[in-house]
Image 1: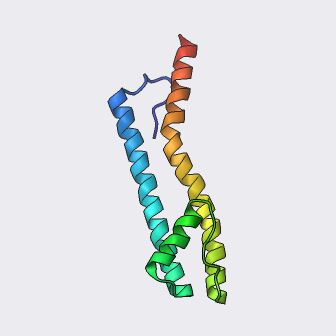
Image 2 (image 1 turned 30 degrees about the horizontal axis):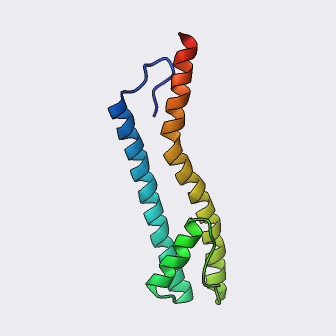
Image 3 (image 1 turned 90 degrees about the vertical axis):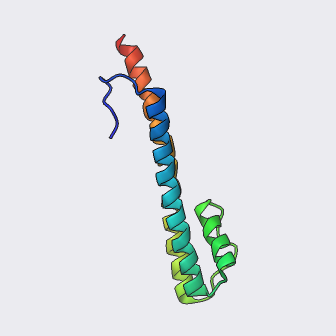
Length: 114
């Protein structure tokens, strides 16, 4: 996906395009995850969409749910969604940071070879 260390550094315009593509991918993943969480809270706990949004957003942000689940299905969903949200948090951080870290490492290797 990225250029090898033997290739020259990407131009600033192409690098910005890469960062924007990664950010768009991360945003799409977050939106899909938010919709999944909202659906689950609405279906299992019969929460209004605003409350389902709040619970899902808080879990995706790493804060934890606001409304404790009451049904068995809701408890199971909330637990699985919390695990999923933790993974999504790490994946999104990796997606956003990957192009920047790659550019720093690439520049370091170019300077080392000179």
